Amino acid sequence: FSSFVCQLNMYGFRKINRTPRVQRIPGDAQTWEFSHRKYLRVRPDLLEEIKHKALEPVPSLLELPREVAAQLPQMRDSNHRLIHTLSSEKVQVDRLANVANFT
Image (tube, rainbow, N blue to C red; front, side):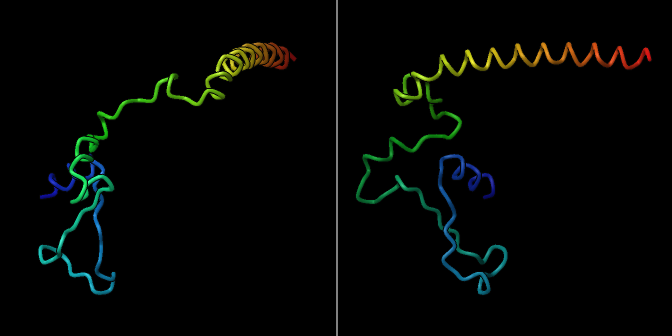
């Protein structure tokens, strides 16, 4: 049963607790109910959209909003400059540490 519950969770189903916490009973006597926003009695067409979480497509650059996609090259350039600056600073720190060790 726990494996079945894990499978439900992997497909986006969530457990519904309708009983107040103080009235819940432990163990097997508990009623289990699950819900999914696309699992609706009146909408069987939505069943195709219930996918295994690991199989959901990763958003690509084409799916990003146009403004964000336009900023990516600038952000990459800025990132490369920061990496280069960091490397230079590390070299200077190493030199200063060597000087400090000699005194």
